[in-house]
Length: 408
Image (tube, rainbow, N blue to C red; front, side):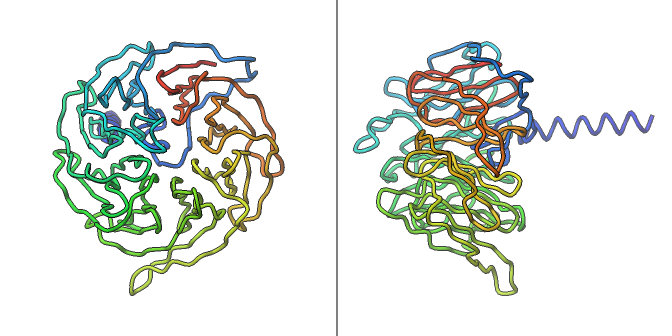
């Protein structure tokens, strides 16, 4: 009897946890996955790789570079349809649109970003809600099952970065945290996940296109890549704990999300290669120490993935796939094939995957000795800037205007 009660309680707790946070291996509920590290835990690698993937379904969803997310059998998207930014929920099995709601009028995207008029920020799903940030900084929270609006915040729409808002919200404890504003009035802000009340805000930190993440080696520490500095911020109060200067060279914009392993942070995307810093807690606060720097191995619009002590990414100029020793910073190898500096990288367990903007999904072995490509598949006829969702034997790809489901 006690065993049955224990099992029932365990199932109840697990169900409650999944409902709140979506942090299980079968969900991809935010930017770069549940841990924001690009690791996929349930990919089913085929015993024999097919010559081509099977098209499961394809549906027009609107313009935008925001990556799709997967939770409880549903795909959530944020796109631009006509003159509105729109939140969508799509059945992952069939491609049927479950609900579709207008969030706000779409901002006029001008300048160098004009060819990308849709949202860039990846939704977050947690607490039974879906959180979306628009290209102009409009922040909305909707019921994940029905699409009903729960709360919204339009306070930070007066200023945006040069290429508009791309920061993806982070759900942490009872907060939803995002970096809004622009160069002059950048603000890291934490909202209550339930009603949108501002819990804290850290002003005066210029925003960029990176996204925040937690540093689990320390309790209560948030890491945010700003326009010119890497920031350590307390999760509970939003107080600045430390700052490390990360200036960019010409035509680079701190678009890469930091990679964290233990007390070490790997930084790339400034146009000056890649480097690491180590964070230590001292009696007087935190100390930040640079460990190594490699000016030859950098990224631009992609974030590296660390696996078995090595970093895998796409090179900053032409998107060549490369591998760097995470301990020493030395280049293990750089493949000779040019792809695109806009790319996503994911760790699928036995294999790695990268999807450059070319729409060619590439699978290769996580081997630091040499580059070993397994196979590539054409998964889009237009350019792809969103990260795919790879789940089981399926690959969900958001191209210019469509969401496509491919199957092995």
